[in-house]
Image (cartoon, rainbow, N blue to C red):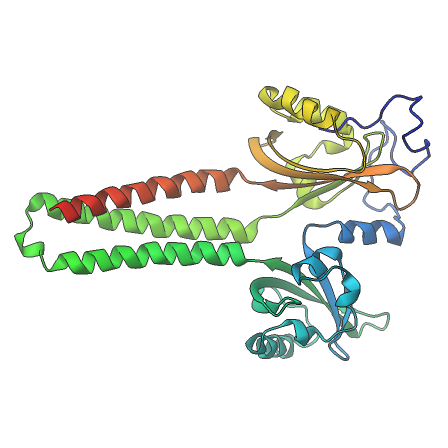
Length: 340
């Protein structure tokens, strides 16, 4: 996937250093003590928007660059210190207040859908995963919000609802002529109803998938050794501790893509960011993973590390193909009914 080092004599690369990374025969332990700036860097490089508000005055005390970008700001400092309600639509402000009152000091479960504002005044739908953070005394002090822009998902739901409404309208208009239709038309209507049910089931499966996907996050040192992997990454790749980044490329990428991936990274030199789709071997077989890989400076040395964020898109590809097939079926039925 990534060629971790260049030529030893290349003076353009950072000087070699001794980052606290495990050796080839030393497994990674979950109780390792990482410096605070390491996890700060992880949060700031996440593709998810993270925003923290004070429960004392409702003002924003922290946000990562992704949250600033999502709200149309060029820097997190434009949000920090401002009231959190300033970035919500009026109806969402009351909804958030009732949500907080309902849970008190207990961390809520599930997601909350709100309408948020950008700096230019435009609005967008968002999904928030909310949890409460406690201070040293155990008293709840802050509200942690992980925000996702769900504009694309809402548009998908609107489109599916539009198809369903058009379908029902077509049935209603054709009902007036049912008395003149023959048995063939009746059979086609029954097939049409079965197709509608299949479309609703496909919609439900598609939405369930979108709402349950988890990002795979890992950090590799410049020498290719694993530094950190979250539980989702370890669940996909149980033996990842024994692999270097180069070994992952050779052992986990489908043979048909090895040359393509190797060629992609041979031309990449830090700093860089690349996104690609790879057929990746997992314990359950090959899965299509969309990888977002970027180089970042190590928080505890002058070396470069590589952060990998993966998203399993196998089911999404299958559902897209299924949806297209169903829509083509509906169009053929519609054309036949109009012809009759």
